[in-house]
Every structure is written in structure tokens, then in C-alpha cells.
Length: 97
Image (tube, rainbow, N blue to C red; front, side):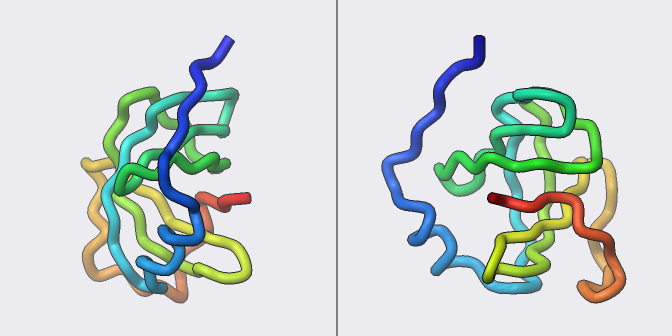
């Protein structure tokens, strides 16, 4: 049984605040299944899927690849560097449905 997480704000408000190329910090607050997570960014809880394996409570860095029509991030552990990466030549790690 998984915990239930809620955010007071609508995800549309979150989407208005971010832009392609932004770098964000977040935390994995729940691991739902292999490669399925609840990611918390700026008090928003976001269901995500990733090709990478993360642990509950793990802090991550994110690079926004796309905002519309689907929110897509590249995600890195805090030990990985995201400086000097081109937004056009990275693979997509997280897709928000």
C-alpha cells in the first residue's frame, strides 16, 4: 500500500512557471514501482516514469526538455553534473503523464 500525496496547487500553475532549459531541484518522495515515482518540485507532487532507478527520499536535479504538450525532464542524481550539457543531445528520462 502506498501513501497518498496531494498538492494544494493545480499542475497548470506549475507548468506556467517553468520553461524549456530550466534547471530544477526535486526529491523522490515515493517509489511506486520499478521506474515509477512521485517527484516533488516546488511543493508539487508529480507522477513520473523514468528509465533510471532512484530511491525514495533521493534528491535529484532536473533539466526541462519540453513543457508542452508533455512535460519532459532529464533527471540526474546530485552526484551527477548537469553543467555544460546541451539540451538537444540528451535522452529523455522522465515523462510526466
